[in-house]
Length: 286
Length: 319
Image (cartoon, rainbow over all chains, first blue to last red; front, side, top):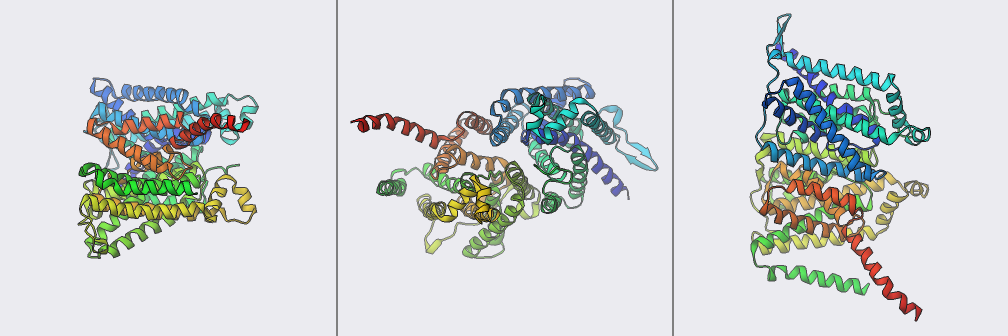
């Protein structure tokens, strides 16, 4: 019983982490029409940067914000200096993000070496939370809480603000959005760097659960891809539902059939592609 | 036509003479490696160049073939049965992957092939009992095709060259066949092709299966060459390298992927002997090629060639 409850909770917490990873990925994909294949690299960079800040004596929450901000700035530079020059060449943009992902992975290996960096959860969150006779890992609950806060904040941003309305307009019909005077190219930078920021933030928050190690990027990128394939590009709700579906499958897959964890991810992807290729909450491309 | 034939004969003679000139085993093995990667890039180019379908999961066919071959050989199958079944299984997986990936087009296709490739990688990496996990798994010995021993570097080179020549001939015939024309039509004008009564989906799916088949053959050569397979051989880097070979040479030319394979394999081997930063360089080449040489090296040089020829021709016409 304890096993199932703890695994369920871990799955939900992991789903929250995946939401931090894939919400920005999905929004940027929906708006800019490209999957940022360096997104896993951004997550890994966040994990390493956060660990470095903590090891240098910084507070964990300072590290989370610092890593998020740093990766966000990298996102701005990447979008402005490289992606912008390839505007209109969608395939070229995707391949450039892939090239940059290799450079990030290799630089991380150069700077932080091949040994994994463990980042302990902040001291105040280490004692488990006792509730109804069960011990819950406090830190994971906090990560879930942060993911939910971010989800609500993104929902408000997208659904209740002028900026969100402009982004949604860009996702639905970019030509028309440009036509009515929405600065779509500025939105590209905003959304892309927001996605990078969330990935960096998620990297540090995820480090106490996953550690920072070479290959973390390659482990996380397919999860983000599958979330978006399941949920549909550009859909916040899709990213939310997809994250928890993938979180459950991956976590229980690892716990129950460690050899086949990846194969289990394959099944929902097949079902969605066969029956609803645009994703569960994706809009049909016009 | 005759000039093309002469060029082909010269290239063929040069390729046949390689083991006579290059006696150093390291460089001869490098030549075999180049041929294997050239075949992989050539098969991928059926999709990328002729089909306009950018796949980022092509190395998975190397892995599917190699792992299946290792497992079958260990289970006691003969070399020939192992080779046939491994390629058949991998191609069958390709047929399934094609059905899934072609549910989407453009970037969606790229994403699904990437996810599928990563899933194959993840299974190879995690399924320790079956695949040996990160440590990889050994293939017992090279086969003796028609009783010929190919364990030495020169004989293996000739074996690889023979397979490559057959593959090149088939792919060359294919892209010049009505099917090749239909595939390019499906890339450039899918709507018109549908109006003309072609089944665009079926054409692209068939191209995917063929690419998977030749990719699997390259995978078989890979496991014969290395006598070893590990998840590293099917990582995203490997798929990306194959893609880079295809687009570096110029995705539309038949010779492009071969030039790309030569350049990338040489650079990779030369650089790896001096520094440990191949992945950074791979990424940098990607960024530079895409930003500054969007049509690849072969079409770029061809453009230069015609530009150089044209001024020479115009005075003749005037006279």
